[in-house]
Image 1: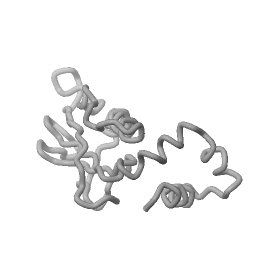
Image 2: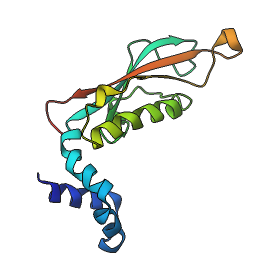
Image 3: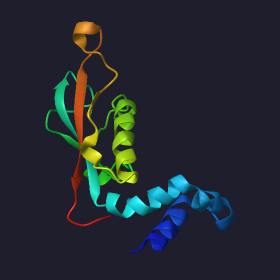
Image 4: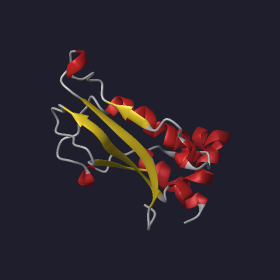
Length: 143
């Protein structure tokens, strides 16, 4: 697949007609994204639970949440329950990986690659706490 084919796929996925997509096509920052997206699509993002105590949603150490390189949770590969209170902080972290991918950098250059849920744990008046560590892994076959 070449860059022009990718641009058409992105336009179709966004559901935008030519008139609405034209400003995106002309924007220099999106030229960089289009250039790097093919290489970036070779990765998936893995958020692995590294600490879990008192999690009402049942997240346990070693459990993995998988995302494609665009930040989409791969639901068929996800646990039955994914805690909504973990997602906001995880989303910020996934965005850092996405930015690296779309700018042509090593996605694993994210220095602070851990995030946790909003629950502060029983010692601080909450129920529990979950911490995930995110990494990018190259896939054998691009999406």
